[in-house]
Length: 112
Image 1 (spheres, rainbow, N blue to C red):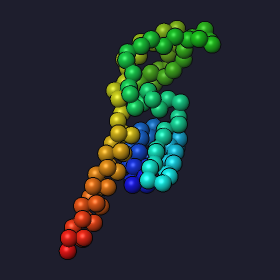
Image 2 (cartoon, helix red, strand yellow; image 1 turned 180 degrees about the horizontal axis):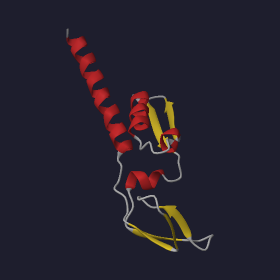
Image 3 (cartoon, rainbow, N blue to C red; image 1 turned 135 degrees about the vertical axis):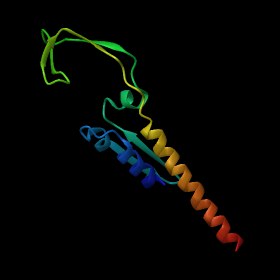
């Protein structure tokens, strides 16, 4: 079941750079397992963010390329926030569903 949860989390994670999926760690023990996303920003992807301001801290300005390809320099950006991405919860549900399916099959096999 841990392998199913891990695969679901790995392939369900956002893949802009692949770092989040690459930070997943599976630990399995006697009758239990855990999957963790160790990327420092994982919590913000999973739980989402509220609208917030981003200000330059270690430089005089922020520099980035706009959607139109224009280079922008500014001291403040008003970020609209992000929606939660529940890929870890989906991975747990995928593993839970598979476990129920396996146990149902075993039960039917025992009844035969």
